[in-house]
Length: 254
Length: 228
Image (tube, rainbow over all chains, first blue to last red; front, top):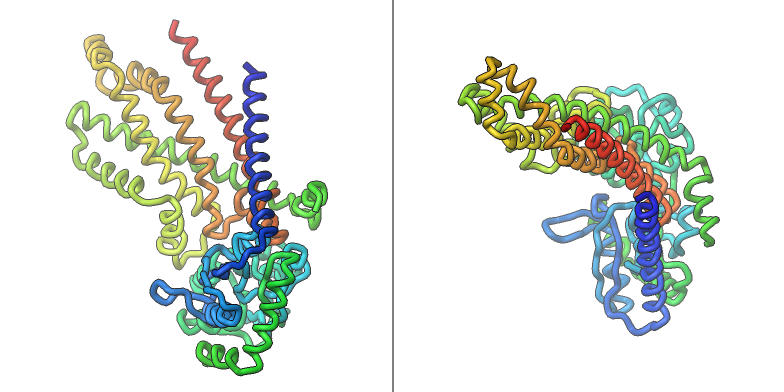
C-alpha cells in the first residue's frame, strides 16, 4: 500500500518534469527556426495609467502606442497580451512574448533573466499619502505600513529599505491606493505618472514632492535575441529623434 | 543557469525561503480557523434546514438560511474576499487574517451545511421513528441516533470540502495577505523564475493534502470499528 503511494508520487513528479522539459525544448525550437515573424507580441500589465490601461476593450497608453510605433518601423503587427506584472518577464524569457513593455525599470536582477533595450523614459517612484498625513518624505516612511504593487521597483526598493514586515503587496496599484484611502495602510510607493492619475481619481490623497527614487524605463527582450534588440533600439532612436515619442507622451501626460 | 544555482537564487539568497515558510504558517492558520467557522456555522445551517425538511418547523429561519447559502455558493470566494475587505470593512482597519478567516469560513459553511444536511437526510426515516417510539423527543433522537450515523456518512465529503478549502485560501493574496501562494509569487517577482517557486508551492500543497487525507482515512477507520 505504502509502496504504491510512493510510486504514484514519483510518477507524478516525473510527469511534471517531462512536461516542463518538453515546454523548454519547444520554445528553443521556435528560436532556431528564425523564420520571418509577422506579429510582435508585447506583454504588459494594463493597470498602469497612463502607460497602459484599458479604454473600452482596447489597451491604450504611452507604452501601447510606443510599441505600436516600434512594430510599424519593424514592419510587423503588434499584439498586446495583458498579464500580471510579475509574469511579464517570465513570458518574455520563455518566448511567449517578444517584448515586455510595462513602464519597466532596468534592474540588475531583471537583467539576469532578460536583455533590456535602451532606456526610453526616466520615471520616478513617488510616495502617496493621505492629505492630513505627517509623512513628508522618504524618511517619514520608517515604521509605517507601506503599500506597493507586487514585483514593481517600488516593492523591491521599499522592501530593501524598510524590511519585509513594513510592506503590503497588492496585485494592483489601484488596490494599494484604495487601501490607503481606507486607512488600512499609511503610504503607497508607486511610479509617478500612475500616482498622479490615482490621486485625481481618489479624494483625500496627495503625492509628496520629495521623490522616493529615480529610474530608467526600458523594454525587456529575451536574452540573446540581439537581432530584435538592435532593431528595437534603432526604432527607439528614430522615434525619439523624429519627435513621435514626445507626441505620444504629450497625448497622455498633460 | 544550473538547477543548483536556480535553487540558490530562489530559496537561499536573501533568505527567500522565509516567504515560503511564513506563507505556509499563514495558510495553515487561515485554513484551520476557517474550517472551525465553516463546521460550526455549517452545522447550525444544516440543523435549521433539516429540521424544516423533517418537521416543517423553523420556516423563516429556513428561508434565511437558504438565501445565505444561495448567495455564498453563487459567488466566487475571491469576490467575497474582496467585498469583505474593501466594502464591508471598507472604513475599518481590520487585520487581514481575520478578513480571510471570515471569508473562507463563511464560504465553507455554505458547502458544509449542504453536506451535513445530505448526511442527516440520508439516514433512514425508520431510525427516526424508532427513536421516537423509544420515547426520545426530536432533539434527543437527532443527537443520539441520527447525528452519529449522519456524521459517518458525510465524512468523505467533509474531508473533500476541507481539501478544497485549503487550496482555495491561495487567493488570499488578493488582499495582500502573504499566504503560501503569495510567498511563491513574491519570490517569482524577485527572481523571475517561474519553475522553482511554483513547483515548491505546489509540492507543499500536495503534501499537506496527502497528510490531511491520511488523517481523515484514520478517523474513518476508527468510526467504522464502532459499527460492530
